[in-house]
Image 1 (cartoon, rainbow, N blue to C red):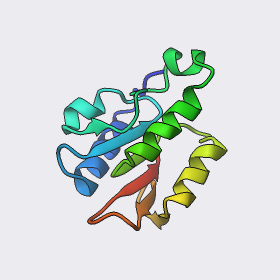
Image 2: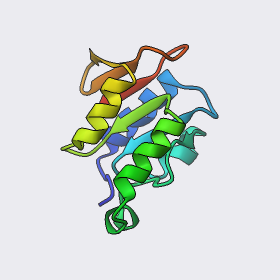
Image 3: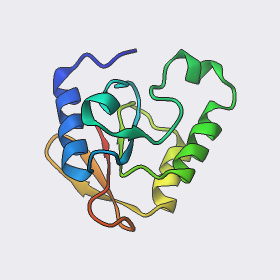
Image 4: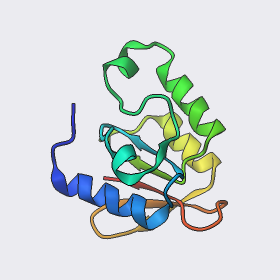
Length: 121
């Protein structure tokens, strides 16, 4: 299901622009597949959206988490209502820290030079 809320899309773009540089790896856990092209960022995982290809592949979650382990994103946006426990474990394991912001939950990666972030829209 595509995100049609333009304010969510704009917020996601602003956070990616604010917390990463062109060419950095980013990831949207949800559905805004065109954000990679618009932001000039590389997806950190092979599933650029949680679409039917993701949901039909039995090993998709494990594969995607493996991709994120191999290429930790500078910015990771959680656009789904209920992120899986395995994603939350990934965030804790890689030392993402929660920081309150206006309109979103923002998570900052502590062990990355410069700003890195995970936010929940």
